[in-house]
Length: 534
Image (cartoon, rainbow, N blue to C red; front, side, top):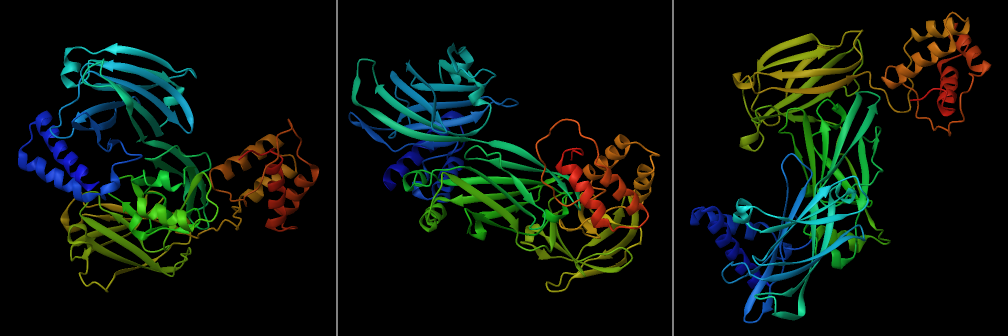
């Protein structure tokens, strides 16, 4: 099969050259890079561009080219189907196509059409209707210069999301509408469109955060979760674990987008599991070359998918992802100009208010394969918008020697602080920030600011009413100021009064007759009964 791939790659060179007038040497370089960047069986399932295996058409060897794109600034997806001669890259004319689209085992539509120019284009348009509508559009002169004379517009709410679309393509005539093919040329191809969703996290230590989950294979299921103890993200999507499907799948590519304000996930590296099994470290890369976010790429190859399928005893119809930090330290990021990487750790690891902490950091040159470099830097420690510490220095270029600063954390500082690196090597664009938490709270811990006791006492003595006190508690929990253990809630049963025992508890707690845990039990009861909604 390698021969036809080489032929097709050479043909692709010709097609690109004729279409874009690029120099031959540039096209040849692209051809070689594409040819040797992937295994030979890579032309298959789940990409945005594919060339299907060649078949005989009379004395010719022809292949089907399927390409896709998203119209800029819209969610409209275009897919083109072209049958071409592999010997010269010329499109076959007078072709009759029958195309059926399937998504998640559901047939969305089928359509048939004759194309004098040999190019069949589908435009998938998001809509509100559950019914799929199909109409044919004549393309103007400029559109025909670019390719097709006609476009099929398909609209419906089935196209509101991305994911994997499977197409069954039958070609019943070619090189003349009376030249019926028996049997017809028969192809099956999968085309993936990016599907993304966002998950809100109310983290105990870093407050409100948002994780982006992006799939380049299929639709992400509504089961995303974040475990603050393990600092791990889990979710799943549909997947056929059969060897037949995997052999048609080049890669499964996922992305987790993390805000750079989420310190627990600013680690140097991540590990991942698929359906409970470890995957290779080479499948995971971290992209820090964005000012606001970092992206964790998970790219699982066909070979690794096959190995996983053999190890899995009871394969489901899902692929379940779990991504967690390899280690909690060091934290790592890249400067805004992309030149330097900064790794940061500290001793002791549990930073407390009023204690001395030693920060250890390395400044590495990204273009020198993360080699330590000696450059000037400005380092500040920021809390609540105010600068607590500042130092100018020259970093070390000794590989096993860290840069160090000692910092006495003020008694009033608790929660996130920012270590701000600026002007590395006297470059204003060499700038980066890493967030660190003081007085870390675990998910099992309860944190109640002491001034809430005053409010509880006023409520117990009717100086403030139920509604005001409950709204205040609800706000404090939602904003992460008051930390309450995770509590399951029951179904709402309408407006409910606050039980007397909870109000009594609040008064006793305000006067130190009961401890924090007893008061928290009352708050948990209110959450469970949905009297307080968080």
